[in-house]
Length: 250
Picture (spheres, rainbow, N blue to C red):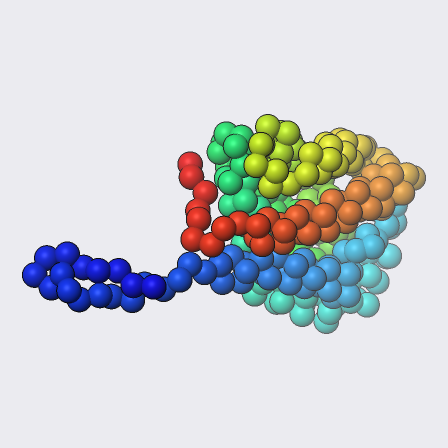
């Protein structure tokens, strides 16, 4: 393909590169890669998932950090290097939301809610756990405070994510371009329900509604895992269906 220039050299043609979606596929590839690394860091290195118990004394907490001192530090180092992947993953969802016929403000609400929630929901727990391992001679009550602060920040930031899920659901329901299926909007509403249920962890230290409980945590994880996988699947489909060379408009 070529384009003819105007002016004195009107007979000269300049090559024009064919439309490509390579940049979109690169970003799309980062989406699953980031969440895969996230899982490795939080499960195998930080030992935040599955969550340790909230109904324990200082002796248990100190022993927990003693047992995982090295892996926690390695996990924080890895997380700090890949933390920006959250912005790429959430930014790509925002990009595809702007292709919808719903108002663009929904995309910005989603981006803002996820950005605000990611700081306490991902980074703060890692920093608290790393700080708890840095000086073993700290008083147990200080180590215990870092333990509680980290876990409550990780699972207690429900308002930020609930707002993002609501914007995502409304955008899908009002969209006529069928970027995402309508049923994914209703699953996103279930995400909001699990966030509301999780608020009980601020009150209860044991049982189904504690931060490691079967309802407040495990039900929420199951819903989130299914939702995230379907979101990634339809992002992949949206990338494939998007005509090369097109961009969303504000």
